Length: 265
Image (tube, rainbow, N blue to C red; front, side):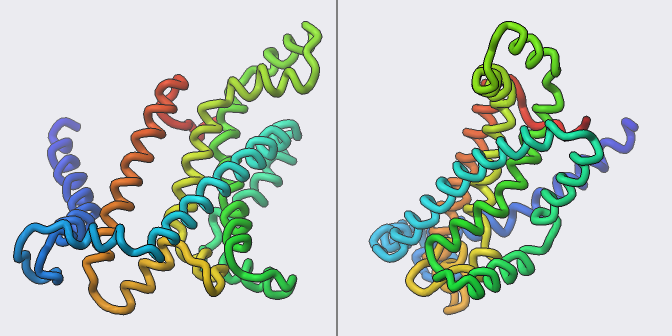
């Protein structure tokens, strides 16, 4: 095993280089004064200044953040209640419900987006802010359920029985026993839902209407018009925001007494 470790480290380093080299290449040329990605002429912050002076783009950033925060919050509430409900069923019923829960996770985003588009069209629902919000809530709920269920599985039923024996009501059991115990899973589900909402393109592309857009759709539209270092600057800021989000998630889960979620039962 010792002889194979250097090769494993080299392989891991190559994988990381393949994954991160294009990102750092993009960030590097976001400071290029030449305006192209073929040669670096000099350092400049003009592309970032131009980015922050674009009022329309700032509104799109605000739209994206509002959609992400609202969908993460609502899906976390519904997902936590759904996970608690699933846990209350018997094993066979749990497996059946989890199978339905996992459909939106394993299904291709294109199919999910097209399905939502057909649903909203048939229902006469206008595409825009609310269609995007509802779609993001729908595909985020199963993620939250999967993040919360492992913590519920770790909780001993004797805790609930003891609370009831001491005269606790169902509401007190939920708020003072169950929710505090599964707090790490709740935070994990919230941040995962937030990340998925911020990064989603395929589903959002189908359900976005005229006059409303998110960053992922806007970046795609800008990229189709040709190379512009505004895209580099915007993508660099998004990458930085994602790193900060991961750091916050790690810090919160560490303080809650866990470094991650264990999916093994």
